[in-house]
Image (cartoon, rainbow, N blue to C red):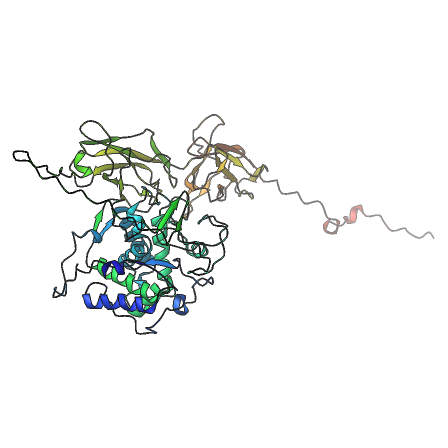
Amino acid sequence: MASHLGRRLRRGATSGAVVAAAVAALAASQGPGSIPPPTDNAGGDLPVGAGDATTPPDGAGPGDSSYYTELPPLNTPNKPGAPANPPLITGPAQAGIPATVLAAYQRAEQSIRSTDPSCNLPWQLLAGIGKVESGQARGGAVDANGTTNSPILGPALNGVGFANISDTDDGAYDGDKVHDRAVGPMQFIPSTWATWGQDANGDGKKDPNNIYDAAQAAGLYLCANDRNLAVKADLDRAILSYNRSREYLNTVLSWFEYYKRGTHQVPDGTGVLPGARNDDRVTTPGRTTPSPTAPVTKPPATPKPTPSKPGTPKPTDPPTTSPAAKVVRIEKAGSGTLTATAGGTFATRPTVLAVDLAGKPVAGVQVRFQITGDTDARFGIGTREVTATTGSTGKAATPTIKAGERTGGFTVSVTVVGRSLNAVSFAATVTERAADTLTRLDAKELAATTGGQFTDRVQVKATDGGAVAAGVALTATFVTSADGSQTATDGPFFKTADGTAVRTLTGLKTDADGLLTLPAIHAGEKTGTFLLRLTAPGGGTVTVTLKVTAPAPEPTPSPDSSTSPSPSPSTSTPEATPSS
């Protein structure tokens, strides 16, 4: 029965008898898959989203139309008669989740709980879906950034055994310009990814083949329509909106319950793959296509050992040694200074090399990178700590590191997981945002009279290497000469919020377009020509000339005839005396 349950079944092509058999086997086993089906419309498949308004109009959820019905081990962790609250699982291989994949699920839970706490998204639900959709990204076959080593593609959705969805992305994600295919470890259809895609690892791309991006998108999709996943009805609706099969629902719930009872981290690339995963898909460069009729290749028979002759020592199996146990040291690999401006991205990523006693590189070693110190810099996925696995060259690198707004130094320390070897440290520095050029936007002459205020404001633009320099801290100072830096003690000035006159302003910052408009400038009581200099980290500077003149004198009133005195009697002309 176990092998029967491990067979790949297709949504829409799954017979009711097979579904019933699978569920019956689960119930009989009392294993973690013995999940009672939802009470609403318990028979048959449900439409996508069960009426959810936000379900994409293409009639499909994120997944393609295929999935694996492989179930958690029926003999662990819930054996018949086991206690109701069994201890955490620490050993079974199926309970192991690859380190980067596990980090992506937990990161998505933390992120979504901070923005939508009422959804109550558990990372174990993402793990259950990831297990069914891609076997945890093919057993954790991802790079240090969380991107799958090769694309994970579902079959062509051409209506033959699957939904019929014509191409919606011109093959951008799935390489198919005729029909859509589900893409990535969480199996998003391109049209659904166009709506829900996320950039959770901060590399500037929304990549469905990146486990951080895909897990974040899947979590948001499951939380749509104000669902509360702590409520069983909402939980069922969320899973059915992802893939509209009742058997899919039961299988995901089985893994969800299994992972809730306990998991452990395993190195990337060592996760347990679903049954027949390597046999029923044929991988070609850039895409994966189904091969339902491909024969299952049995492993070669193990030759029986030849009986030893008397006196001949019996051969013994060579002891297995973990990759970490072979490492004698880790050392810096590559070169380059770790420097970035505030808000920017470090061009160089800390990289280490793990070597054995002979100085040869060791692959498959888990190393932990940690950002320490008084800094708000973070790895691109938003954390201060990440775990990576050395590749075939023995090297491992961090994801991209993003600088925060806090300037100064910090350290990236690197250790081997599970070993007490000496750590390797990388010094990193965050510098101020810079501008190599400041330009005044208006060359209009600035003039005012004593005791007054300049009508026009000073506006400048900051650029660095020809690009807009946003968030750059500028300083504005009235100086005594064009070639000096001494601050003036009289003449024009700025006013602080409390009305205090100052001739130097700091903490000014350019906006998103690199622009800065200075506050009003007061003329002061001294006439003459004055200089205002603006400077920026990075060498940008501009000097503005201001002229202060005395107010024009008030005009003297001109004599007004209506108010002039009348002639005196002594000067008046005598009247003519008539002659006799």
